[in-house]
Length: 110
Length: 113
Image 1: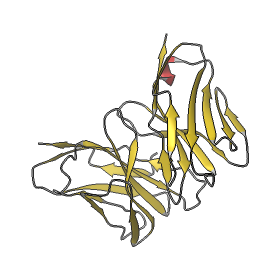
Image 2: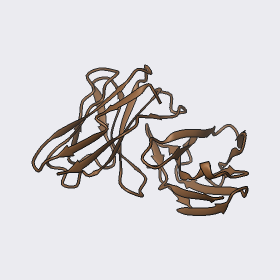
Image 3: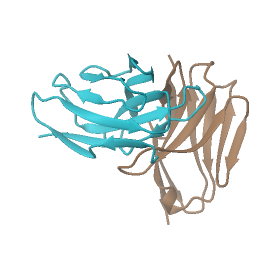
Image 4: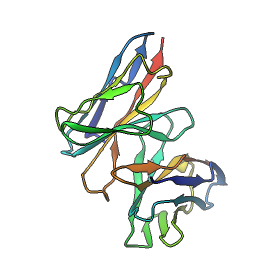
């Protein structure tokens, strides 16, 4: 089945810096890759997703890139702000179900 | 997402007791899911259902049971066989299309008395 690895587990940046979170997946048939943001005690919320027919997608300060050959995808956050502090999860669609990475705790210091 | 309602928000279980967590959605989604999240951990799939009257075990189904009698509802029962039930439980739903995101409820925090 699908296996998703996510790095780093913790990421600390200064406000205004960029943050990059990387994920790898194992199933070459996976074709959908969402990213979720979860604030403490809250539900995960979808922030961006990418399908396998594109290599990059951008939404304001957030972008996701996908390399199908290498089976990895990354989340890029530019001009980070303190409100970006949260746990971020990547995921890949496996057979009938999403498989989640273990999460990255992002801390943005003012 | 306002379309998925989980209740209660907090739940306490006594030894030997079964408890049921409610999940209702009005998004007309075919698929529904239950996840368990432990402190500082990721999401682990307990059970999922692609269609009414059908469901499959996820990665950590032991000690849990579900039913899917209605499209809108997917209740999760935490049985006494689940020896370590303290966790944050999240319900999600999605369209049947594999390339559609899952939408989550606000979660139920279960603790042992």
